[in-house]
Image (tube, rainbow, N blue to C red; front, side, top):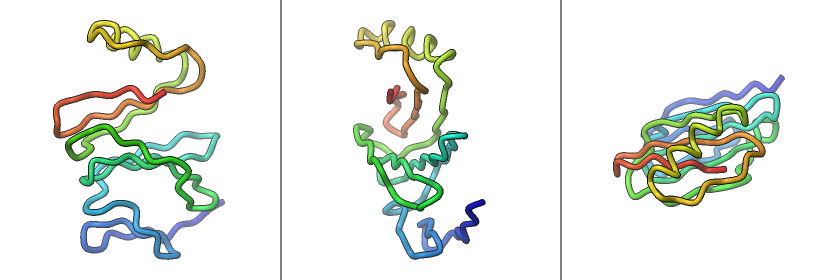
Length: 114
């Protein structure tokens, strides 16, 4: 099992090899198991997708204009709720394959990253 010596220091989360997670505070975390992904959201308005086994960032999501407050990973079976919310806002809905990542931000928006 991967053991990380993560610690809070000066508003940032550092892994044992010194990778800076975000500029400013890490404000939200979500874990996708068994795939082994960790998703972090920061005060810097970004969301990062990490591979836990290697502590490497594989994707950076941007689009919020405020700090990230919450993250939630929905399995494909619950993705229909995210699609309904998108349709209610007049947005194009994503196809129903794979999990959905929902994020909430200080800018007042909720986004569905699929």
